[in-house]
Image (cartoon, rainbow, N blue to C red):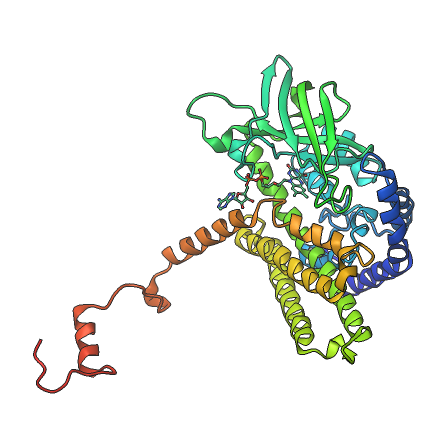
Length: 437
Ligand SMILES: Cc1cc2nc3c(=O)[nH]c(=O)nc-3n(C[C@H](O)[C@H](O)[C@H](O)COP(=O)(O)OP(=O)(O)OC[C@H]3O[C@@H](n4cnc5c(N)ncnc54)[C@H](O)[C@@H]3O)c2cc1C
């Protein structure tokens, strides 16, 4: 059951209150603990605040499922997710952080009751975390048909061998389960889209080796606990296969829609906060005899930032509405559009803010450098811009191929001889009288 407008408004106020009381005052501590403890440790302030958020019912708001989550529609969640996105530490506090949200959705949709008991329940309770291991250093992983990690059936087990990287969260000691994508079908002639599978791999299985944390623009942990993971003869029961052999692409489609839109919702919140800081700074900083806010270049940047944020918000809300009304598959062009637009918008807004803050914009006192790292990484994570643009372009072409241009005035063919002659006779430069040609 979706929330009523009153319930949603109350939830929104409650969330804003929690952000003001618990999140913003603790951010400095979060960054310090992250730096001091490093990527192999859990961050204590997150665990403390998780308990408070859970006690207040600000928990699993992302999950549309009534029983397990808050039962909100994508459109209803959008405004809440945007508020969480104002802080890079907040989504995890509310158990609404990637990649767990996507992984939980996979387990809700495709997990067996046993998978759900073992992995979904503790994830929903915030007791463990999870990773999604698809990308590989040795192949262009934006094209998932290239994924080479092998899953070979051996009796009642699968034996898995492969090398993964950018596996978000694997260095986290609370990460207990990986969803691994790999190749399981090797017969000639199998469609490349039926060769990949997804399987559940408990992180403590012998042969799962988390080799190293990877920095993202020099940051470890924030905005992302990227990691490199090797799977050396990892043996898991065949029952750990999700949905069935060769059905990895189907799962990927189901997983990525909500995951992508949540990133965009959060980026809008992040950009809003950055713009707020930018305005305050511009008013307070005096250079060459007047506040920086009185320079027309500043006004233009502030205005453009507002326009771009608003455009992205409307695009995102439209995609959320489409997902609710016609489903993730039908909304794929809208999802791809925001996946391109929101990170580019956020990169631009943060870049202007960095410029506005001068040298201080390059350290993390105002969280601008970690915000930039987050926005920039999201032009790659969950598929690079180019791949989404290709999809948008192809869908756009297809749309027009299926429409009769007589109904839309969308003809693109050249003029007929009669039309050309008419233009020659009556157009802007009619033929001079007596002209022979
Ligand atoms: C911070 C961060 C977190 C991530 N988290 C995860 C995670 O948890 N799990 C996971 O599995 N992966 C994760 N990734 C990996 C991410 O999904 C991949 O980096 C992305 O899909 C691209 O794959 P690739 O790196 O192999 O680039 P490649 O496939 O090698 O592509 C490189 C570049 O080629 C260009 N290109 C590719 N295809 C086309 C095309 N069709 N047209 C034009 N140009 C093209 C693009 O510019 C692209 O960026 C994460 C990445 C980052 C940065």
